[in-house]
Figure (cartoon, rainbow over the protein chains, first blue to last red):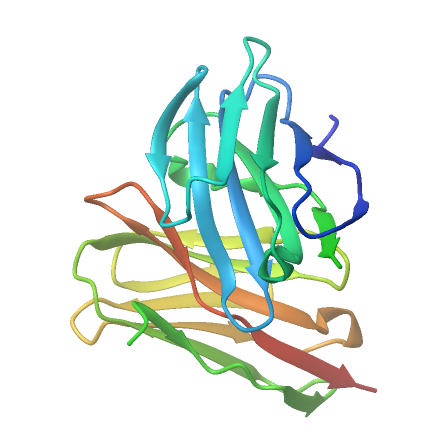
Length: 115
Length: 111
């Protein structure tokens, strides 16, 4: 069965630009979460969507936004990029929210570099 | 102070050694405890999941939870070079439904 697919794998953007990242969850999974991973801070929770509704949100500025479509695919958008936004962005899906016994299945991430 | 503290390592051990990885936490609302393994350039993959205090074993891996001390451990027996990765503990906050991760411990097992 296909895993969590994130596209693109790598991105280089300039400060001030905006970016959209995409995540396709495991078939049948209705919950999608987004995390930012940096060497200093580790994984930090951005937001979680379940059945097209944002059910949870982390402590990130409003420049970070997301949405989920009826097929459970999700996108996250970062506007007015800053150098500090350079990170690995990970998407995780689960069949329920919260994840329960099966935890979250992560994609391989999108590596965003802001120059 | 972070809600979850994890020694970043790196931890370097010879093949066949027993490895102990640990996390401490401060929030009593953490009720579900997980260990993830992350290889370079990959996303984290779930290794172990446990809810109650005590031990849970799966092959060479044992997860241990001590809620009274707010301390969790992952033991790896007969470690292999293929175990070389970053190990992340994660805890689900019962009040907020948020999954909080430790910063990860980098493990290297040399032949």
